[in-house]
Length: 260
Ligand SMILES: [Zn+2]
Image (tube, rainbow, N blue to C red):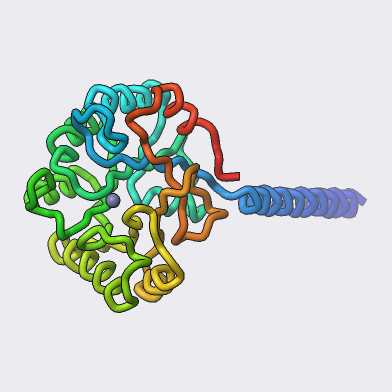
């Protein structure tokens, strides 16, 4: 009798456990389906030159840049490496609190001389989209400086060789601009440089096809707003930091998800 009762109790417990397990699995699947439906969105800030040139939209005063980095630190933002950015966007890693990707285009010498020390103070990583043909020319980075940035945890990736308007070039010329820059960076630094940023944000169908064929993982435009897993990986949005806008505008662009 007792034995029979125990068996019944055990069967009932097993049934209850199975019910709970299947409920938990369904809830988990629903949660990730929900996440996939909404996607992940991350603000990607696009800087150029950090220096003093009043009136120039693309030259941000070092004091303003320092103030922006202080804001990120004070408000517990987590600047990501490129690998972390990809992992979060691909749902392979849970998103840290307030993720953000800091990108610098073109390769100005002041990125190493001015921006790097400010970022190092906060231990923030960044990504450089480098036009390799500008290296060692006046006002631009030298290869030793680029090695220094790489050693400090920056990701270095391709922004073409000569910074052209890609849609104005033949397919062959586009291919050279895209691949020669990547090859040069990979040879110099010995790391993959498989992401891209379009000079002037310009691209056409040929550009997209070339990048896809060459297995670039991501490419950044200057379409305004947060980057999101709902956007095509070769057409991710960024927030171009405009030195002429008030600080409050920068905060608003950084904190309001505009990817939807
Ligand atoms: Zn550029």
